[in-house]
Length: 300
Image 1: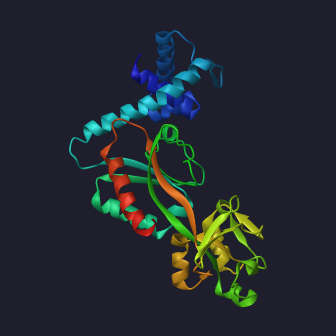
Image 2: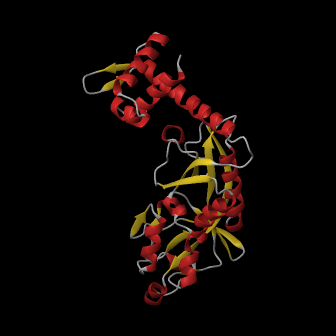
Image 3: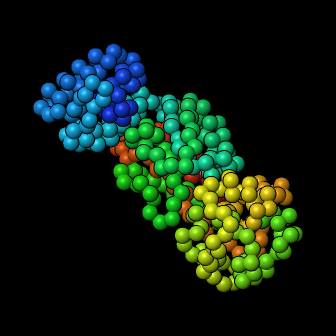
């Protein structure tokens, strides 16, 4: 079995058309077609069932693609690791992070520190709400926020890089209009802006030398984006729980103030994940180490 033929087959499946694969590999479409035909002949099975305008992946094709993409990813990183004959990391590092984290000063500090230490590594950063498929999308490292088990963690290595605290926040204008709550019972008389991360579970609030299980009221707005939530809180729409590290700039500027600041709860964990490999590229190892160092200064 020819590895070039196998790689072309995987790219056709992932890009959806032979035309797209030929453009990416910069070869004629006829070359891609010949490679796949040769691969089918070598294996003795039909991989793609073709029609004039498209193709359908056979069961054998699905099996081969599922097994081959991980193997090809590892071979690419073995090659890169061999090219990096010195201990100085270099090359291209594709990073994915959720926008809530990626727009923070902590994340910017992380990228700055990494670039200062490893200027030969070219960072490509994508901020996405969805959970990326690292192998299929060619992502080297991704941040995952989670409670308990890491989502989509099968076949991935991981490292815990921090857990923050959450606090209740509101704008000075909102508190002046509606009053400052002093007890948990008074919280239910307020307008709530909720994030989905905090409404599906009871929060274990710590303060006043006690731990109280608290469920957020239904609220006037439910969001899945902390950046938008922060803007709504600053505009005076209500009060809501946010991670302290996300709200610290707003608190410093005075646009948000902590409500019952002595009361906190633990936020979800933040972990780095990367494809499992026996030959981890130095640039990935270096990024994981720097991320742990920088983020643990701000989280715990």
